[in-house]
Image (cartoon, rainbow, N blue to C red; front, top):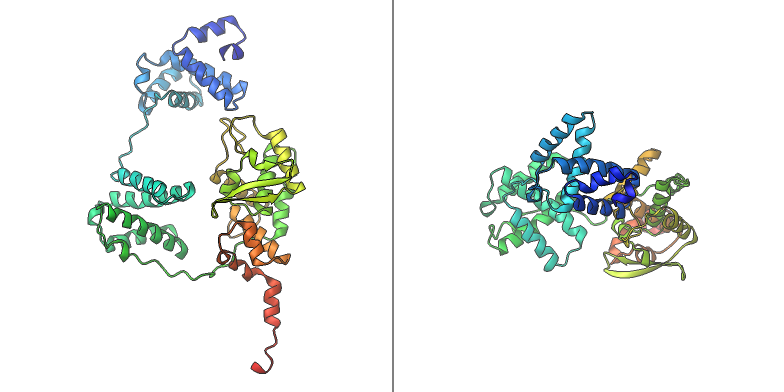
Length: 407
């Protein structure tokens, strides 16, 4: 790798003869394979050379942030600029992590072992999806950290302590649905904790969430004209627009979930038969869609011209190095930014808003709820019934219905 980056013989020898040459070259090769440009690699190579000269022979025993800052101070003593220390740390720390030499700061968390065991149970015993485990882990972790910081012991918790938690956390502007969701998550966790002898077995049953009425809300869907504005805004040659257009079309035309778009693989796009074969997360089964010409064009343009060359099977890859597959959070950021850029006012700006827009448009075109549910990958018709509230034509018929003598 050094030979690709360094043109002069003296520079090549300087890099090869310095300490940790093999470790530096292996990391630079890894960065190159991840999509780093030659300009970026040269900057990394120079900073890592300076780091290697400043590290001690015992560096493999571990470097923490305090020690790295001490080394960075020696680096800035030679040449100091506003960005020297930050650049040195930002380049050296990933290298140390890659080698396994980085010592992460130890964050004291009393109930970490409880959380880890509960997550293993969710995966191994309940078979929850990765997205569900991530979401529930986040919520349970917040609760356990609250218990730790307020001095409450899990085995001594009382219903009044649970009330105090909701009162404290309600300052974060939780609505009724969020409170009900959190109550359900805590109930399942505390039942598991009781089965392990960690808390009072009657604690879970004492939790009462607010009543949530079925179909009480409307789907927050932007107007289809606004969706078309968003798509039209991506009709450029900018690499980010080309990628985002393909993502936005999958969300708004096929009604895909953000996780389904993020996990879509190259082998699921059948170009010969013009099909998209995807895996529906809620149904836990595959579903086949026709590959519409407009979507095929957007996908082909992204994959053939913009998509980085990488070993990852996922379709959508980050444009910046290191190039990894986009996550659900990354998809949310892309969609939200599009709404904000055009000043489109909607209750929710995430990918699910485009899924709602897809369903609302299908309702307006006269499709039945069963057909819409199948298109969206719903497991049951009850999940689709909420869209009947935005079926304006049907609601108009109900409003015009003449009761005659029954009045």
